Amino acid sequence: MSTIAAIATPNAAGGIGIIRISGEDAFLVAEKCFTAFSGKKITEMKGYTAAYGQISEGDSPIDEAVAVVYRAPKSYTGEDVVELCCHGGLFIMNKVLRLVFKLGACPAAPGEFTKRAFLNGKMDLAQAESVMNVISASGEAALNAARNTLRGKVSIKIGEICSSLINSAAALAVWSDYPDEDIPAVETETLYKTLTDNEEELQKLIKRYDSGKAVTEGVNTVICGKPNVGKSTLMNALSGCERSIVTSVAGTTRDVVEETVRVGDILLRLADTAGIHDTKDEVESIGVSIAKERIETADLVLAVFDVSRPLDNEDTELLEMCKEKRCLAIINKSDLAPRFSEENVRLYIPHVITLSAKTSGGEEKIRVALEEILGTGGLDFSQEMLAADRQYECARQALECIREAKTAIDSGLTIDAVNVSIDCAIEQLLTLTGKKASEEIVNEVFSKFCVGK
Ligand code: GDP
Image (tube, rainbow, N blue to C red; front, side):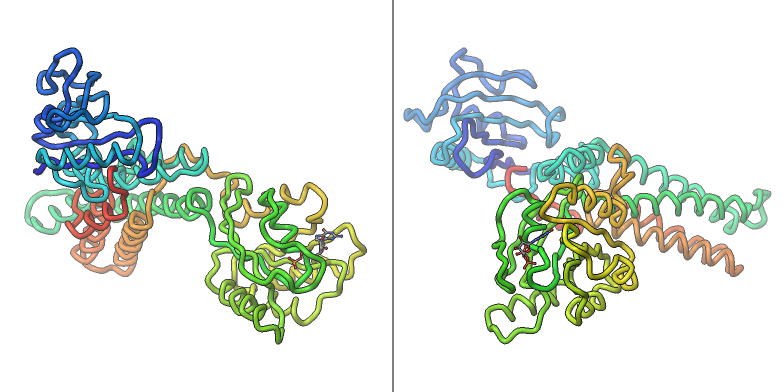
């Protein structure tokens, strides 16, 4: 495989910039541009050692740097690797990188270092996918989840489910292929129990992923309600900063203002809108149509109502729209005299809280309610957690196949029919961890990475 190189640190000025070189010729390429002040040659250095020296192009010095040497297979990629740590100026880093290319290395594609780690058996596909999650983790819980997957927790769990299914499939195959041999019959009850146990394990993983996503990636949330119910005030209270325009003149939050807000462990990707209301005002009607559209596409709706005014047609229209959605109804302005009760709203939406966005304490009520709605309350991030939609989809399909196998047993179908479904589940699980993933899937996974990782 060719020797690749890329800047491994961000494409911006920083204290240190790292140029990573990996492949057969990594030492030779580095040696041609790096001279250690100690006189030691890179090709002679032991793995996990560093040398301080000079990077030069011919006789022209570029920068002083530290070269760190990793010898195959004890490196991130499993190949020979040199990391040249120079000063983190964009100009310097690019100059060193161009020089390294000139000396024989090729530009690394996005995720190519991690792809090589996968191809060299340093990690499986599930672990590789969690590398980007570790990098993008925005909170303790998200980091915990990603780190556990990177350490192989998901892979171990999927491996266990897979082995148990393979054992069942093998026993079934032997039994049906050699009917004349004296092989004990596979007990349907035992098989059924094995399938049910694995079904439960997969179900747990799938459910945890759904809830975990609210923490790791955030929930696409829309905050809506008529003008002046207190949406902006609420949003500002949640995010702790004055981003959207708060005003007492009805209908002045015209545009959609987006921001990310952390409520406890949950990450809300919020959109504040002009609210749902009929208007001739051209600018504002854009906001209204966006709000309606957003409700349909949102994963979570925060529907806000003003308790000091009776519920009217617009409120009812919003309640109707939210009936089928995952929704939290927030009855605001509890500091004022109420004109309707929670029960009026609960007829449409099961989760209702009453608070005052202007006084403190409301955030806590919202957190508790959201944890219940999103199922993040008792979420244990030290447990294994799927790291990507792709893994989720494989697990979901494997679950389907296991259920098909159980239905086949229930309806007295042949052993072959049961085995086809079990095989399909095994196939999906092997794709999940990458043991049997096609080249297209592997390429797709790594195309989402950044260059240098
Ligand atoms: P929006 O149009 O829904 O975004 O509403 P705003 O957040 O702009 O609030 C409209 C008005 O209601 C402003 O004058 C706020 O100060 C006021 N308001 C918001 N929340 C409360 C509350 O809990 N109690 C009271 N009394 N007033 C509130």
